[in-house]
Length: 293
Image 1: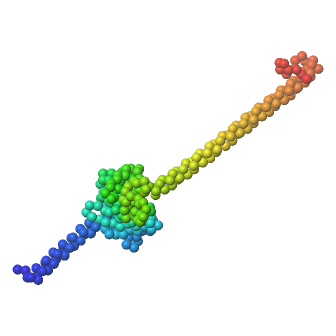
Image 2 (image 1 turned 90 degrees about the vertical axis):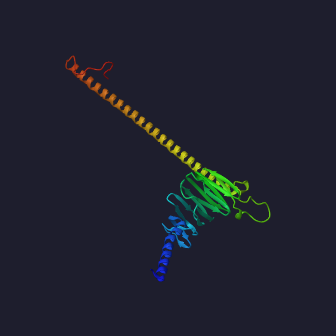
């Protein structure tokens, strides 16, 4: 029979073996993703390096740079400059708590569900779609844009689906103005009183597009002017060539006339010499219509 000492040692070994097996399982459940690349970004105050594993509870800060985090094999989240965020992971989804800044999220149709949370407002890619969305915080409001697929915005008991190419602005309840006076709707999507920041962006975009259009018009005018100048130069060259050809023809005609006159003079001199010597016909025949001087 085994002694009590051996039994205790065997029991302790089993407990330790169970802990060794359990630790990776618990750690794996808390893994959020890995860093695909970054510049000027930190996690917990430490520089963020490629292939770094991120865990639930980690705090990410991006200064004048960018950070790209891979969730699984297909989904990606890009954190822009001046962004502060933290991560939570449970068995169902990954949650990104956005304190400030902006993020772009690409979510594969079959990837791990991901939730972007700003205060009491959540932005979730709609399952079944490949989704590309952007969330930018501006003056306490969140501007949500769906580039591809569809985003679902949840807050204060309301749900709004943002289709491809659409943008809405929402003010989280925690960021709504306090004190006297009329306050904007708390956690309400798409209200007129919270379109100010988006209107600014739209006006800026219109200005940029107008500048591009003006630049294109200037380029078109410059190209037209260049083409007109080239056509004028070609016409001038053609006129010069025609004038040169006319002058050459005139010179050729003059030379031919002088040669004919000289030939006529020589022929007439031969005829006169033949007449003096009693030769009735000289070797030269005067052209029809020509007369000796």
